[in-house]
Amino acid sequence: MISVIVPVRNSEKTIGDLLEALKKQTVREFEVILVDDGSTDGTVKVAEEFGKGLDLRIVKQKPKGPAAARNLGVEKARGEIVVFTDSDCVPDERWLEEMVKPFEDETVVGVQGTYRTLNRESLIARFEGYEIERRHRRMERKKFTDFVATFSAAYRKEVFKKFGGFDESYPAASGEDPDLSYRIAKAGGKMIFNPRAFVYHRHPETLVEFARQKFYRGYWRSLLHRKYPEKMAGDAYIPVDIQLSVATVSLFYTSLFFVPILAPVFLLLFLASNLGAIRFYASRERKMLLAAPPLLFLRTSLWIFGFAAGIVRELLLRSRSGTSSKIGRPNRGERRARRTGASKGGRRR
Image (cartoon, rainbow, N blue to C red; front, side):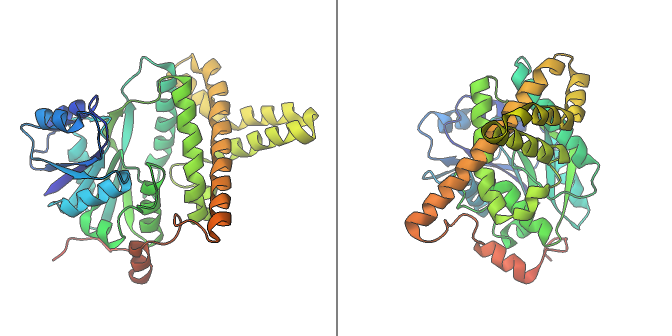
């Protein structure tokens, strides 16, 4: 049995497309669990209409965030394999088949799928898609991964529960998914990236949407990296030129205040560190020769500003309470995982 779990909140405009795509899956025996995280629009009504023909259950909770919603979905799931996607994704018809195929190897405990861009009419959305494609090409060359994101993720339910599921102290979609996969990988769990399992996704279309997304990625990554500082050096998803970009842009802004004459040097170093990325994007679309450099600079700048804002937030919380915030503390599942180690695979007998 397979359980597909989707957290939803005010998703009436996109949930119908997701459910229609799930009806077309080559795998026929699976259940769908939608966990409504306090929607105030017509999400539930639309889901009930488009969910006809699926083994669909809708579970409701007060607004607690996607981590709590997914954990609740797992608690309600009947499947041995739990598969996650998002309410604004449109899975390929072979998506579910490809997501569960690696579990034929009983030592595999988790699977990561990939994205394709749904709204290709937007240059910014295409840029985002090319960036993800390049990172996933890198993941494809690795035997195992330590980074599993919930737009297309699957776990053995027994392993998911053994590690305590997603850390619900993350208040938004903000790093709770790599947090779990970091824990599992650290304990020796084998997770696979499968590029044949893909969903179509709507990426940011405007500069405002793009900027907001990148700022908050940096903001919440400050909390994730406080918990896993070793991952600041990179993981299966982050190529080395990302660290170089962050370093050179940070030095650029620092030089503006202290040694302005060096600012152009750091800009040139930034461009040099991103030549591989720019070349890859341009191989997909010539326009990216001009569009990619400023977008890469904006992306990196907003990561840095968001990361700094996250650190300031944590310092303020500490000064007010006298202790660190609960984000970053080992949860019950993590403490149990540290004692027992990773699952060696296989199904429960």
